[in-house]
Image (cartoon, rainbow, N blue to C red; front, side, top):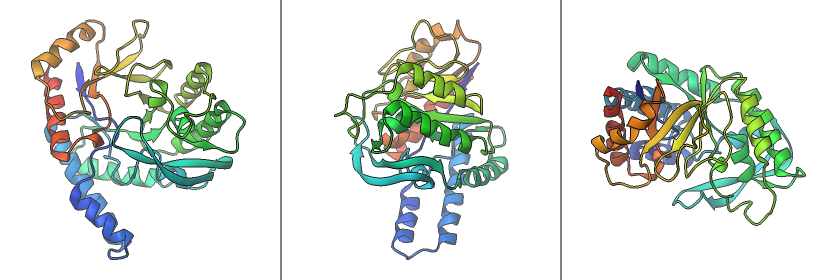
Length: 309
């Protein structure tokens, strides 16, 4: 069975972006902003239902990038300048690690409970998953001024994530881990330090004992293959290693260009995997933020049509 699924975030609607801007300059109350988040989440779930996407996220409309606002809830971290997110026209505010990491507060369960309430109203048949940055990617994209190595920093982030994840009201957590498959970020590229594959694998497998994990490693073929998780592979710029035999998600729709794929050619690419896997998740190959909103939804509708195979 082919299960169409969303990974990560959606492009923020212009109407919601305007509300957030009004709030930031004091022209909109927090209550009105919350109403806007809920209304846009509801519209999104309706559109995901109509597109046939069966595993969904809340679009991450409350997030500025994959690290923020999470790092504002962690003691020992400050936020510094903008860095380019790999080779994309997409930037993130870098975490600067100043001291020992610990979770100060965790509003994410409340956000997910709101999303769950809306989902049950408009799309009860979907599975909602949480989305968080993984410990390895957090370590690589931080400026480390407190820990002796990136291994130690990744371990500290994993401890924070384990505490956060256990309180989430959903059973499935998507872990964004592009660092398992791509180069270092600009924040750490000038150093020779690296997270060892053994450490990376162990940290993710430990988190998978807290909640079921869906590990996304867009931008290529991962060098680390944790066990006991759903692994999502980029089929546009990467491949599925022959030795991998776990549960599988395939990033088959290209979210880095506006050109639309042909459904019959996507089906042809899926056939070899359908002979090996009883259940197969199909997804965009990366975050849909890189596309205009209208194109992103066309890509999702194409993805949903694969669910009839």
